[in-house]
Picture 1 (tube, rainbow over the protein chains, first blue to last red):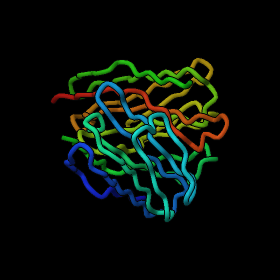
Picture 2 (picture 1 turned 120 degrees about the vertical axis):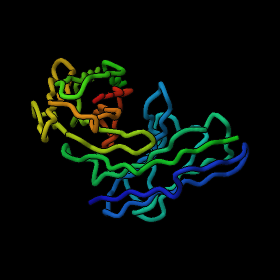
Picture 3 (picture 1 turned 60 degrees about the horizontal axis):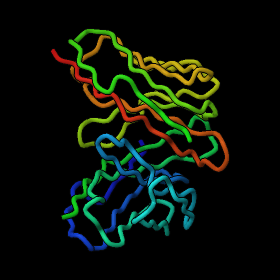
Picture 4 (picture 1 turned 45 degrees about the vertical axis):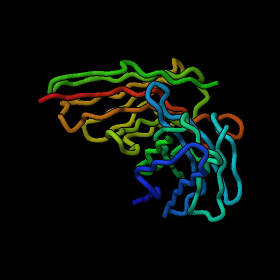
Length: 115
Length: 115
């Protein structure tokens, strides 16, 4: 079974802090994704990566950056946390991007609160 | 831009009922359509994936259909149980350009099955 783990289930940070959210997958997947989920707005893609050191902006990249130094690990970085970044953050991975049978596997999520 | 809509937003039914959740999408150039389940405060679990060339997929009491030309999918749940209570999310994978398997999600249907 594919396992996607996220470093924290709950996180509380202060405005202006630099925040790191870590995601690790154990199935040698090419693609990794970061989403945020907010009531009434659904899941929105922040960034994704289709290979080591490769990254692409999603729909809402402002205020975020990412790092993928190793294939299994994808980090989301909030350079200077703000209260409007309080949200549930979900990481996902998928085997490849050119298959119509490929699905995404999700981690349990990190509930981030910025005070 | 692909848009995905799910109806109804919430549904409450007594145990044992058969029910249908609806999903519509605006751009028919898709790789596949997927249905996910999300329990409160948790990540997403893939239920069914329908490739663009397929009409339906079945897993146990779940059956999902796809009509790509009309931009619609339905998730049918037979003989519902309280354990089916969750949020159900529909997502489409866009087939155009450098999509890298990105998913566009609907807002979800919150299902409550009461004993």
